[in-house]
Image 1 (spheres, one colour):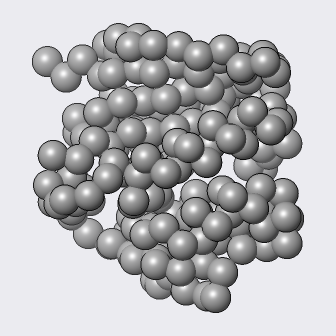
Image 2 (cartoon, rainbow, N blue to C red; image 1 turned 90 degrees about the vertical axis):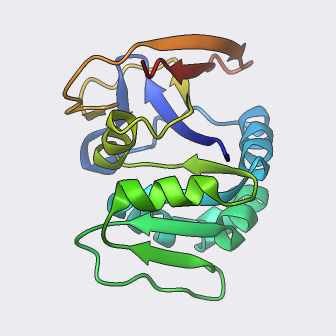
Length: 190
């Protein structure tokens, strides 16, 4: 069975984005870009919710995305992307944004089927609601949280709305030169 892992950037005070989807606080540099590209190569499928899709479909094919991090942009723009949304009507493929599929119903069943298919890992780049759904339904095999050494005060907390406590074990950590700390966490699905 394929492994499904979530990757999220988080501020020290627990937010995955600031107000109005602000991500300007992300602490990225060459070391992070190299890590991101290697991590993306572990997977051959990216899954995401509507909000993340709408942010990414406009960023990665843009001049800013293509020039800012061309290696990750190429991977993002060409890798199979599955968008899970009950409200989105359609997804659009373009020359620089290919291999996009929309799934509107039976999210849990569709993810279970996807994990049974042959292939590399599945990476979740998610909006909070989508990530909570995956965690509550025991579909995440690993959670990778990169804590940035910044406090932003307001925003969207990671796993906001989770209905019950879920224990996680720390499998390993990695410290980056820019101060970021990456936690590799495994949900204890008992």
